[in-house]
Image (tube, rainbow, N blue to C red; front, side):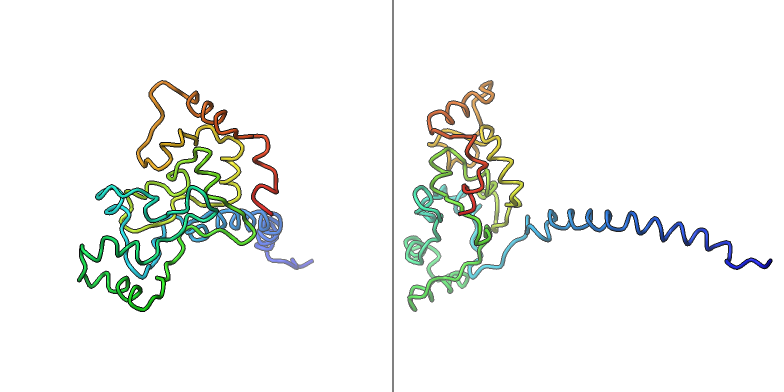
Length: 219
């Protein structure tokens, strides 16, 4: 009886069967990697801004406190973006004729706020309150990274639900005294371990067991 199938059909059938079994798993793995990739999370991506503002120059170089520009960060849900007159407090005297600052001068003249591009932007279904985190001793660098070393701002952390929950389940390593929240280079006292954080936790009445309730972030 003549052979019906070519010998290579055996190999082809094995490849097809393997693909049917492994294909869905590989696709799920690829999606898993894509969701956590910088392409999706935008980690490390510098956003185009109307003015190429340098946090490194203003924070590290000039020693300007975060609250000078983000004035509502201690009490409100939003940290707040500086109005044009805040910028012109200095730049009406310093670099007042710089071409780079023309959008700022135009904003003041036309009474139209600058359209800054959000770097840290959460979905509408996520509730986040800056004031609560600041008052509980969460330093700026925990979410924003070392902005004092960023010539142009980028997202340092992925801001995924998994990332937020990692902190909510174990906040102590991320806590510091509230008077050090805005210190970019703060480190725990040598040899203190988590004792300082536990003390901060107790003083600020952080109820760790409640931090993973769905209603904390989804309201």
